[in-house]
Length: 514
Image (cartoon, rainbow, N blue to C red):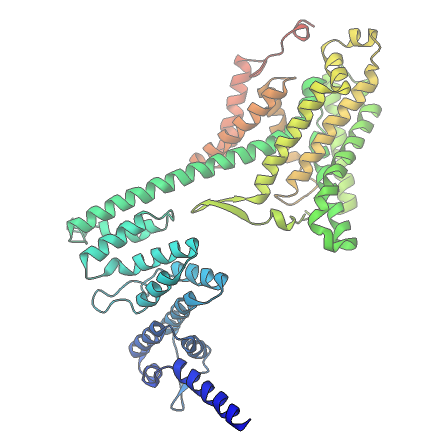
């Protein structure tokens, strides 16, 4: 028993001795700031697990050498943090290595630049980690870190290889590392004397800028589709109530608002009573938003609008008054301040397809949701009995009544359908911003512009107009800002309607003759 205990003790001592740092390296931490920085680099280069412990103690002010407390300033602290990040590159935990690599890559400052004479003390450790790394994502980051450190190498071939590696990166920030190689002095001479190095830098810079330009185009394309899908959701219900039924419903924005507040209420119910199922609250919020806005819309049609068909001015004034009533009712129930609707966990974050281009999951889901709603409305109008009746009443009300269609009931159901779709738009909008009593006012003008531009009564025109206005707004925003973009789009629509009153797509058939 005693013999086994002695063997165990010897094994522990041997293991500790194998991992112990060289005392002379630790003593170097007690010198001046330059000596401390040199010692930190040498300690990090060992790759010893105990080095991380020593540097952590030094950063926390808990390290003493020969009874003397080690004091660090900001310059030394930055070196410690960089060295600790480099040491974590050899961690067995993948997430720890990834975080360390990203942290080290984000610190591409003077502490990461290689000394042309002595070299960067962290470079051997980074290369050691690179040789052992099997994860492609981490390996790519380490390659860029190593290339960054080698930019100031005394070896010309090493510098050119590093420049070429940076040129293969999809990170637009690599441009900041390449530009200094092409700078000129006040006398017009290049700072970088070597022509081959400058040529390699020029090629790599062009490659990085080309990829950055494509990333910008992809980001603009996605932003345009995202805004277009939001406009489509907001205008799709109006395309039915105004486009097909001819009702100028100024309360359409408030029906959107009702859908958003319904989502807010459902979220709070789940948070209070079903916290474990909170991520699934949208499964109930979507149909509830549709139902709430549809019921309000049907009540509005039965009580007010049914007496005003064929009288557009009176309909406009009446629905505008109703919109004010709905806004004040919401303010009374929920308060005048905006409320926040929390995204489910699966809609948080984003999808990074290119460096600097992150597509938020919330926006992706809204685009998919808009496509599903559009497909459902198209099928309903084209393939169902209700859709047949709506199209029949829209094209020729008298003839539809003669063949037994209850036109008044069809009007109610059609208005309820358009109002319910507005509620779905409110549910979607609640996922990308705060919900307030004035939410609908932000989309009512845009919704009418989409319907009028696309062509009254044309769902296909609504789709093209929504996407077109979405792209136009985002493109003009990058040129002159959001306010000028709105003005330019509005002027364009006014001129377009003057030249083509029927919109992008004109109605065909008997409806044109009536």
